[in-house]
Length: 231
Image 1 (tube, one colour):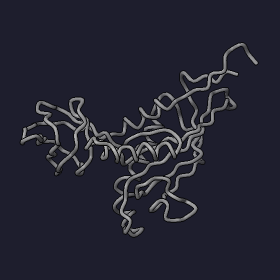
Image 2 (image 1 turned 90 degrees about the vertical axis):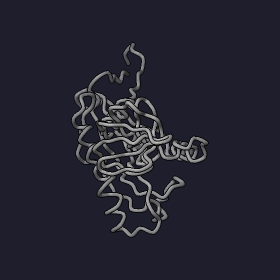
Image 3 (image 1 turned 90 degrees about the horizontal axis):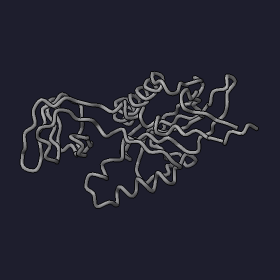
Image 4 (image 1 turned 120 degrees about the vertical axis):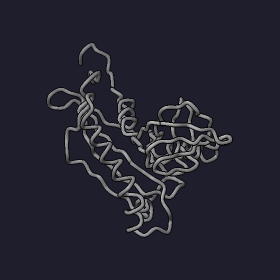
């Protein structure tokens, strides 16, 4: 045992920064006030009820087309937008469930839309020294999105997995491979599609919402910078 104090690394902020990198952005070429709303001219593939960050203001999308979106705030003069989704949380499942329920119960009319799609970094995380004396983290995480109870498996695949969950998974793994602070050290992790998560009793959905999900388990990361596991 050396004289150095034990320092267990935390990399949640760096993981959240990876999530932030895959959030969509867009250029606004015109912004016209319409009552309490603003009509924005922008090329996009956004849907209603998504939330965007514009001029530092969280806005809800009221309507959207391929060339125009209407948001519920006065953001005249804005030149760009950034999606607030996918949202990010880290913690134990029970804590995440309570936080999501709190959004539903909030008096804030926008907050209840700031839930899905959601990337959850599950706690607890194991850290260890690997064979080349780097710190290695083993992580599990979820990519979840709201769904409809009466969807068939084919409808879940066509409406949720193919257009939303699968691209988020691919974008996240790509961003993780491209970052400079940690690298994926194994390709033997498990990724599972959870169709109507909780429909099978032993895979009970711990949340109050109906969800489809991709679950990633056993992903090992070499933490490259500013992570010392002294012992």
